[in-house]
Length: 478
Image (cartoon, rainbow, N blue to C red; front, side, top):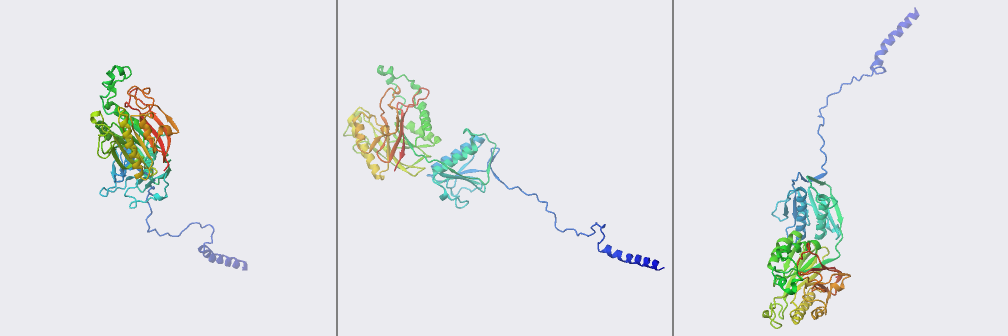
């Protein structure tokens, strides 16, 4: 009986303890989470992340929102030419035109601009520390949606544009690409280094002013056997593109021309700009002139005189001869140029002296010319000077001896490398003359003479003029 009561008491105790154990979660078999979760009042974030823009679209399917912006200044010759270079590359690549505009204050401002050089946007819409650039450095940088192309100097800006064109518009062989779309890095920042030119190329060319000068000569029995050119291939209209091609091929920094008649002047003024050149005529008579490379040098001063006993007023001498003696107006001119890449300056004199009919007049004109060179050089702080021209005499003449008697030396004999003999071909060729009458001279100070050359180029056997071009490569040392 005691045993029965013990068992019954144990059962009752178990029945009392079991609910307590279950309530405490002590049962290992109970894994169901019975916790009630209240619904959230915060909406789920279903926004799709917008990828960061890493490229600027310069153009797409040939269309563009961009314009090329250049400084609004007559002095911005280099930047203007660089803008044209870029727009030409754009058109060649896409077949479409990109607009060029200036930073003139009344022109609208756009976020999509390719800024060439130091435009008015600098300091207001963006900043670039040009002081940190070296003289031989440039920067191409994307700033927001603008593209800035800038050098420490204008020459550097031109080089920067050339880099941009070569990088984005041309293939490895320098050929223009055909593009439908062009994108550049939004964080583009390229600082380039270039070599500052160490030499200048000075050239001279007598153009031959007329079509008819040789018509009578080729009929002369004394010349007929020697001059056998087809005169129809030596008219001005035919020869003009040849001279333009010569300039483009040899890239002189400054070029003295003689016999620059009105027909030549009109042609040059219409076409030189297409190859980056400009003409300056003598202000007394434009039949002589100086053509210069707008990308490498810029004119800062100029002047001219008559080669007479009264150089400022008298066109033809009365003491040495007269027009009745067959004398014509003979001049000398000068232009002071500043080298864009370096800021150095030099004077370029150009002239055309009397023919050999009267050697005394040649000597007199040479004396006036030499005095003019010495005077202008002194006035300009003894700047180095070059002298080009058709002198109508060679190094065997007394006039040449006079010219070499002071501060002038001959690049033909001063240059480390010198090639070429006669420069007057008379439509016969190199064999006609053994010494040049077209010369490149210079001062005996401030210049190293590197190379001299008579250019014997023809166009399929046809001449550019009855004179060959002559050039000298020089280095300024002052």
